[in-house]
Length: 108
Length: 108
DNA sequence: ACGCGATACTTAAGTGAACTAGGTATCCCA
DNA sequence: TGGGATACCTAGTTCACTTAAGTATCGCGT
Image 1 (tube, chains in turn cyan, blue, yellow, red):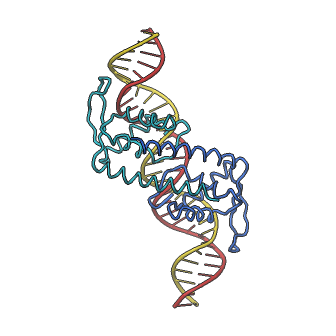
Image 2 (tube, each protein chain N blue to C red):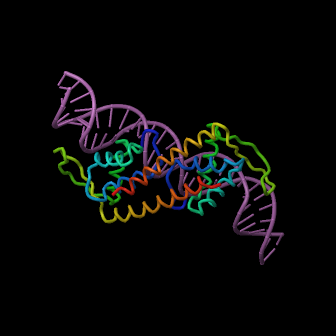
């Protein structure tokens, strides 16, 4: 992740979420994460692109080259059906986990 | 962490929190984490003990051998003043981070 | 009397995600 | 002309965590 970076394992979740409403290219995914979290989460390119390749290898994303909004070639990633199922599972995992941490921190 | 394990980097936070109200030995810290999170977070010993040594080396915990509740020798860890400051910072970091992830997941 | 599970701690070896830090290329704007 | 945004890539490193093994004591059930 980045800056004062954070908590390995959440990047996959964020990437899959970024792509739930339709294909996006890598650079736009990184921008989306930064923007929707108001700069709290800034993904380094050296983390982002390898993660995209990893998710593609696992069958959760599929790739194809298209023309971007700016008229350049860009590699678009689409969420596959297994990817969507995986997102649901990861999301549940995150909720269980963050809930547990919250309870621990709140403990008298 | 463990089981369906999770999210590297939160262990330090949980350990420091476990020790805010007074010294505890490693085994009890592990048990506290498991119990306060209702088995959601189960720390492997191979993660727990190295983490304790790490936190001690950084000056956030101090060690001393005492007799445990069961009458055995156990290494007790005490939160140092810098450790307390670090806990506050880590906690803030966690709250910023988990809040950001929550916003991203909630995004329309 | 014997073994098993809980208590209590240790560490070597391996995995893998993320960070660091470079690189390529195009486009627009000052 | 040069910098900043767009768009991608990867080799090398770091370091937390997992796996898996070990040591030792104690209480309990059978």
